[in-house]
Amino acid sequence: MKYLFFTATVFCAVAFKSYAQEATPNGQTFNFTVQDCVNYAYEHQSAVVNSGLDIKSAEYKVKETTGIGLPQISGSASFQDYLKIPTTLLPGEFFGAPGTFVPVKFGVKYQSNLGVSLNQILFNGSYLVGLKASRTYRELSQRNYTRSKIEANVAVTKAYYQVLVSDEQIKLYDANITQLKQQVDQTVAQNKQGFVEKIDVDRITVQYNNLITNRENVVRSLALNYQMLKFQMGMPIDENLVLKDKLSDVSLDNNVAEMSVDTGFYHNRIEYSLQETQKKLNELDLQNKKTTYLPTLSANGSYAASYQNNNFSKLYSQVFPSSYIGLTLNVPIFSGGQRLNQVRQAKIEVQKSTNDLVNLKNTINLDAKVATVSYINGLQSLNNQKRNQELAQEVLRVSKVKYQQGVGSSIEVTQAQTSLEDADNKYIQGLYDALVSKVDLDKAYGRIK
Figure 1: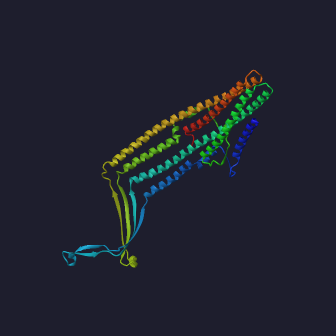
Figure 2: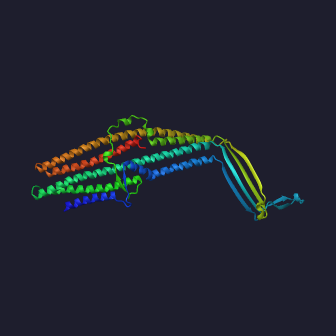
Figure 3: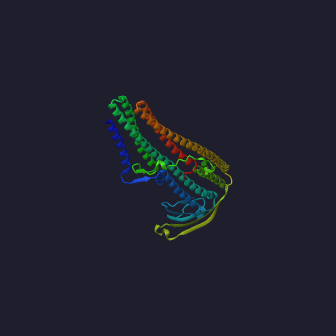
């Protein structure tokens, strides 16, 4: 009965997995290749979406900076009701009373003013540099968007491969469970006929039980890996996702010699482009600091209409207009050395960004070398584990034959079975490591856009 229980458990796990992949609350199923998953992430992953919004924000920033150089027009309006008209003391000599002061009230009870003013920049070095900086800022946001897409691509691809590897691991477990179940049944039958001891049955049953448990653990991990993939894609984890690609569709090329031919590949890395943009921003900041030595010139004008009357109903019956146009020139003369030291600081930042660019180039080259070695090692390990897996299967087959012919022991079969399981696990780990190292290699050489 306990063998039937384990068989039923396996069947239920498989049925649950199939149901989870075929039924969703809204009845929609996404059949995606790895590229489909990546494209979905480009549109739905929050980091990528937010980077796209940053580009729009940068566009508005450019327009905002451009607007500084356009005419600045403002209007004003005021109204005053003098509850007490201001009093001024005038010398009495004006009124024939020398030596005294006569209080006199100037003004009217109601006053109102309407005006409009205009200011236009004619020359401002900081404004011209600011226009360049705003466009460079837009370029920076676009490259940040590209970096977000690359990071999403890498994360989704690795998660996709993790699902494929877990599914392959379950297939290996299924194959081992099938053959081990046959061996359990044969051993039980031989025990009933008195050909083998009870301890042989117990020993192989323990292996069978452990294999079932391990498979169930991988099934649960597979469900979690699906959720992780959907999370990396920005897809709700309760949506149904079926993977169309297979492990056989993934190309693991043994020849990576051509990757080291192009010595200028670091220009393909988005990190290098970002650092170049940062250097450009620092150079523009230096230019901005230098423009503070230059004069600024602006044109301005104003028109105002003044209304005064002691009778509120007649306040706007008569207008007293005034207007002017003019130029304002501001010439910097001495600032206590502030501008000079600001320029010196900006020069240092430019030099630092240059140093960072050189260091980043070396870092990228090293990263590519490490990724290449890791990929080659991963392929060799995978091929070795594949051969070990085949050898372990052959050792198990021979051990079974010897045991059935009475020239081998059950312990030898058990050990061979354990070695096969260990070889399968190492093969699965080697497979995943090789796939991940392939993604890292593509990223290191800037082939992921």
